[in-house]
Length: 299
Ligand SMILES: [Mn+2]
Image (tube, rainbow, N blue to C red; front, side, top):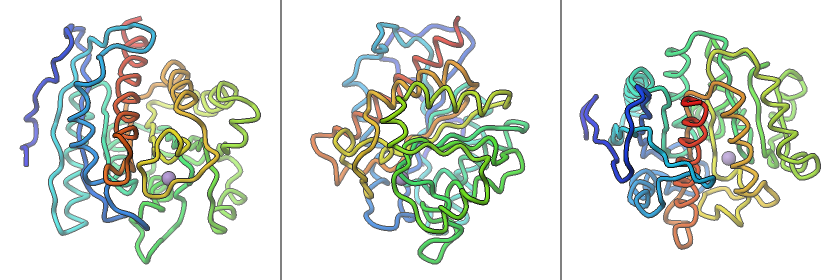
């Protein structure tokens, strides 16, 4: 396991020093899944594919901000101790970089990652989850840290108010979760069908307006939020979702309009993938996220 603070620069593009850094950390953990494992293999797979994609945005902006790799948080069979290590190491990444990128792991890793985020930034903070599922269960499979509980746990952080929580791409809900929306109408929840009917730009603008004024935003991308025709390598695929194109347009607007300071990409499962398309989708989203952040930072 790499020690805290030890990292190497991923330097396959000319790097410029603007005093702005991006930090990357992997959380190869999938004991929180309800159905099929595999996301623990994602950080390594995604890293290995990063050199395959040019470090340039689709609009032709070379990605010049340095990306520092803080390695992976290695295994620990004590779940509580593992999450507390993830939290502490994430806090270091957040403290030392203007943008933190986290690679899951299943979505449960978002619990310690967001805890670190809420420690790092004074409230109110915003949390956006691009996902087929809201993960609002109080408990699932007999545990409060299931990957079906992430958003519910994140709401326990003092800095996050229901008013600053938004979901995009929803299309699979449990009865308790529908009840939760009804009890908290201030949550922004946008279904995949709404994206289809109104267009992703209108939805993104609504989310930007809803979260206006927060000190920092955490963007969580569950790859099952994207339609499985684009990202098939994931444990709980749900059809009828937004495309990669729409996910990227969503990110473009959110990064431009809101102070995004952390993004995770979770639920990529290499053993379930086909020709690495899902891992490559993660690389694309990482790079475009860097590009959107850079465009805003260097403007
Ligand atoms: Mn999901």
